[in-house]
Amino acid sequence: MSIWIECLISFLILVGAGFTLLGSIGLARLPDFFMRVHGPTKTTTLGVGAMVIASAIYFSVTADGISLHEIIATVFLFITAPVSAHLLTKAALHTASEEVMKRD
Figure 1 (cartoon, rainbow, N blue to C red):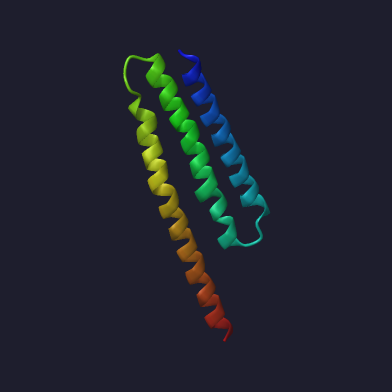
Figure 2: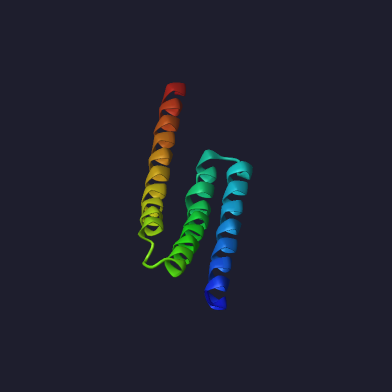
Protein backbone atom coordinates (compact mmCIF):
# COMPACT_ATOMS: atom_id res chain seq x y z
CA MET A 1 0.00 0.00 0.00
CA SER A 2 1.35 3.43 -0.86
CA ILE A 3 2.09 6.14 1.64
CA TRP A 4 -0.56 8.43 0.12
CA ILE A 5 -3.34 5.93 0.65
CA GLU A 6 -2.18 5.35 4.22
CA CYS A 7 -2.16 9.12 4.83
CA LEU A 8 -5.66 9.45 3.34
CA ILE A 9 -6.99 6.63 5.51
CA SER A 10 -5.33 8.09 8.61
CA PHE A 11 -6.70 11.54 7.83
CA LEU A 12 -10.25 10.20 7.37
CA ILE A 13 -10.05 8.26 10.64
CA LEU A 14 -8.80 11.31 12.55
CA VAL A 15 -11.43 13.59 11.02
CA GLY A 16 -14.11 11.00 11.75
CA ALA A 17 -12.99 10.61 15.34
CA GLY A 18 -12.94 14.39 15.78
CA PHE A 19 -16.45 14.84 14.40
CA THR A 20 -17.74 11.97 16.52
CA LEU A 21 -16.17 13.48 19.63
CA LEU A 22 -17.69 16.89 18.87
CA GLY A 23 -21.10 15.30 18.34
CA SER A 24 -20.88 13.43 21.62
CA ILE A 25 -19.85 16.56 23.50
CA GLY A 26 -22.72 18.48 21.88
CA LEU A 27 -25.17 15.77 22.91
CA ALA A 28 -24.00 15.98 26.50
CA ARG A 29 -23.53 19.74 26.87
CA LEU A 30 -26.25 21.50 24.89
CA PRO A 31 -29.14 22.67 27.07
CA ASP A 32 -32.26 22.03 24.99
CA PHE A 33 -33.59 18.93 23.21
CA PHE A 34 -33.88 20.75 19.90
CA MET A 35 -30.26 21.90 20.15
CA ARG A 36 -29.15 18.49 21.38
CA VAL A 37 -30.55 16.77 18.29
CA HIS A 38 -27.88 18.38 16.13
CA GLY A 39 -25.04 16.56 17.91
CA PRO A 40 -25.78 13.02 16.78
CA THR A 41 -27.34 13.90 13.46
CA LYS A 42 -24.87 16.36 12.02
CA THR A 43 -21.40 15.81 13.38
CA THR A 44 -21.62 12.19 14.40
CA THR A 45 -23.04 11.25 11.01
CA LEU A 46 -20.10 12.92 9.31
CA GLY A 47 -17.68 11.31 11.76
CA VAL A 48 -18.95 7.78 11.36
CA GLY A 49 -19.28 8.33 7.62
CA ALA A 50 -15.64 9.40 7.34
CA MET A 51 -14.48 6.36 9.32
CA VAL A 52 -16.57 3.98 7.22
CA ILE A 53 -15.23 5.54 4.02
CA ALA A 54 -11.69 5.05 5.38
CA SER A 55 -12.56 1.40 6.01
CA ALA A 56 -13.92 1.05 2.48
CA ILE A 57 -10.74 2.52 1.01
CA TYR A 58 -8.55 0.24 3.10
CA PHE A 59 -10.40 -2.95 2.23
CA SER A 60 -10.70 -1.96 -1.44
CA VAL A 61 -6.93 -1.47 -1.66
CA THR A 62 -5.94 -4.61 0.26
CA ALA A 63 -8.56 -6.95 -1.28
CA ASP A 64 -9.16 -7.85 -4.90
CA GLY A 65 -12.26 -5.73 -5.53
CA ILE A 66 -14.23 -2.75 -4.35
CA SER A 67 -15.68 -3.11 -0.87
CA LEU A 68 -19.40 -2.47 -1.26
CA HIS A 69 -20.44 -3.35 2.30
CA GLU A 70 -19.03 -0.13 3.73
CA ILE A 71 -20.44 1.99 0.92
CA ILE A 72 -23.92 0.55 1.48
CA ALA A 73 -23.60 1.17 5.24
CA THR A 74 -22.53 4.78 4.58
CA VAL A 75 -25.46 5.44 2.25
CA PHE A 76 -27.84 3.90 4.80
CA LEU A 77 -26.34 6.09 7.55
CA PHE A 78 -26.60 9.30 5.53
CA ILE A 79 -30.23 8.55 4.64
CA THR A 80 -31.55 7.36 8.00
CA ALA A 81 -29.88 9.79 10.43
CA PRO A 82 -31.52 13.00 9.12
CA VAL A 83 -34.89 11.29 8.73
CA SER A 84 -34.86 9.94 12.28
CA ALA A 85 -33.76 13.34 13.65
CA HIS A 86 -36.59 15.01 11.76
CA LEU A 87 -39.13 12.54 13.14
CA LEU A 88 -37.83 12.98 16.70
CA THR A 89 -37.97 16.76 16.38
CA LYS A 90 -41.49 16.71 14.95
CA ALA A 91 -42.67 14.41 17.74
CA ALA A 92 -41.10 16.65 20.40
CA LEU A 93 -42.61 19.74 18.78
CA HIS A 94 -46.03 18.09 18.65
CA THR A 95 -45.76 16.99 22.28
CA ALA A 96 -44.65 20.46 23.37
CA SER A 97 -47.58 22.12 21.59
CA GLU A 98 -50.04 19.75 23.27
CA GLU A 99 -48.58 20.60 26.69
CA VAL A 100 -48.92 24.33 25.95
CA MET A 101 -52.54 23.87 24.94
CA LYS A 102 -53.30 21.93 28.14
CA ARG A 103 -51.96 24.81 30.24
CA ASP A 104 -54.23 27.38 28.55
